Length: 242
Image 1 (cartoon, rainbow, N blue to C red):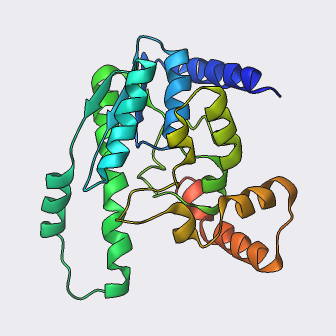
Image 2 (cartoon, rainbow, N blue to C red):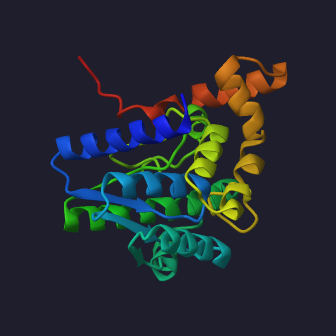
Image 3 (cartoon, one colour):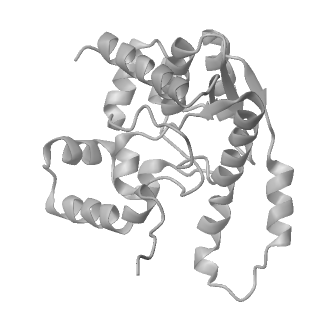
């Protein structure tokens, strides 16, 4: 399928899905990364006058905000900026820190950030009768590389069938700035954090396995294990049935 046809199909799907639910438009978080850029362009095509981008720094790298603002300006996407630093700090002060395994602290605290962003996006969605559009791709969804009820909390996920390289290729077709396409993917959870570093494998390895089933044996084992352990993140909560 050509990228032109793919873009048209995803755009139509966004419009139809939101309209069927009675939504008047869409809201998407702009992280400064390639996934959110692609989603925002497609949303703008689907809802030219009712797409809102939200930039939500939370002790974040200023470069990411700069990329998000550059992108939004290029494509004429209205933006709200909500700085979450103080909210995050206040919540940490309210939470207990003693009596728990210190090794889990960094990840537990880092996951607060995408959950605060999810709350923020739904605030705007509720005020405007919009729907929240997620930015996860197939590669991330497959291995659970997202925060449950954080960036995993959305109403629709347009890139959920595209692996990371396909997203990059679609971004190039959509004329997303090259510096955004080329930057190392990161959830911005802590300074120096990258997706590949945290996962312990490259997107190239992950994409290849998802598309062809081929990978080094150690990579296969790692991906299979990640898929199994994150299965609960891709499902509605389990419900006991007597």
